[in-house]
Image 1: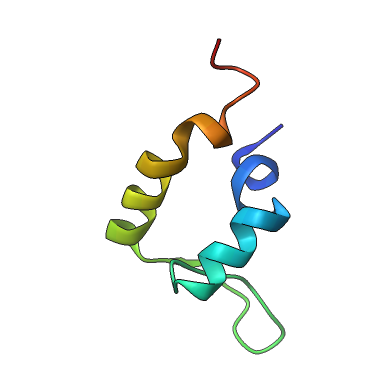
Image 2: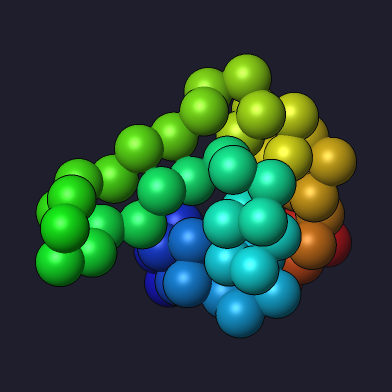
Length: 57
């Protein structure tokens, strides 16, 4: 699994990332990824164990 699978395309996280304006997902109008670095850093810190739960033991 990649970070895309574990975070960016995980249904729960994707919903939060979009709602909080942390990630802009590519679409037909602007086909580039955009990230708010500070917000993304905070989000990953807060959800690290959930994102990597299968590997953290």
